[in-house]
Image (cartoon, rainbow, N blue to C red):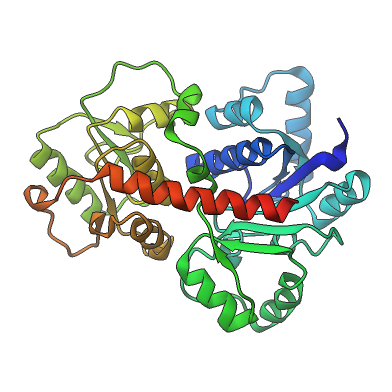
Length: 350
């Protein structure tokens, strides 16, 4: 096994976020299926002070630290580098290993407010000829780069071999501000079928429940969840919040997938909550989330013909008028998009 057969992936920090971890796992699976081996940069959200670094090192040395449910998933399922704190860590990796290609994506890797190491997400640290953006996202249809960043990254983006973005709005942004043409591709999670996620599921008898995945709890969302449960005549919830918006103990990634896939109905305000509802054929409603970007939600819903599943703050919710989902039509649309997206990735890596 030689390192130059590796594809190095740069995404958001591997942290306490189900969608972030599952999209990275899916990205690695997709790359591996194409005959390559993948590794993800384990970049840090922040650089801890010396005192905290020493405490972490001592705990690791004495083996007394207790991994959380997210760290357990990462350790068991994601091939990663050593921790990357600075741009110099990316430079050192590139000089030592010279990977076959670099892939940037998915998630909101091109959103300044969410990315401490933006330069890494534009691959300015390497002269590798295979620079690829796959499902890179701005997270919004508004331009959030300042003038200096716009100019610097306009130059960097022209060195990419292939540029695939996750939202339709990103095509317009790239053309208007960088004058580059890009391709719309699926989020990595959608490159895999539902069956390919089954090994990650846990055993559970919980089935007659509404699964909630609310990233930003607001009063109108709590009212919406109660209304949906009442209309569906289901009083049991599974997920991060109870009826009053109080957060539960963090469930594992496997439990998250299991509770979603076995639910009677899903209510979420998240992109990946939406994605896995679609993949697992769960009837669902998405509550608008302008804070994190509604354009992400609209793009995937339009792609599979389910725009009517998005509910905004002042919309009334009448479940009796909500039509059943035609899953055959959804799967047909997804299959075509998946094929095109895999073809894009295959050509970019060749």
